[in-house]
Image (cartoon, rainbow, N blue to C red; front, top):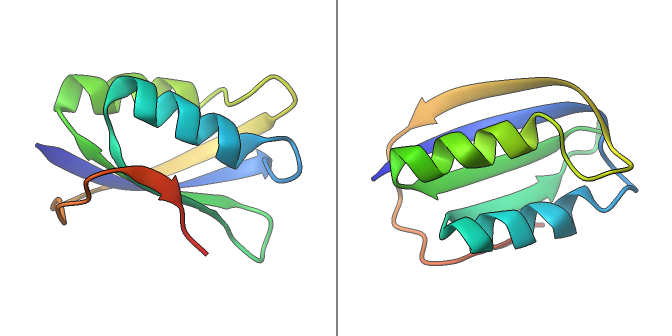
Length: 89
């Protein structure tokens, strides 16, 4: 198991990014959370097998159809033991 924290910058709020990230993460079997940041970014904590996390990171770099991702800043972390993926407020 591995984990990362990511900050996604660009036009990523108001375009269904969180909902789409939940669907993508759950489909890959990834646990963690997604949330909007007050500055307009989206933050993600993701835990799972490294190959699944790599696939999720590729998805985060493009996002849902109406998003325009400018950058994804990722930091590797130690897993915390999340069991599902959802929205964090």
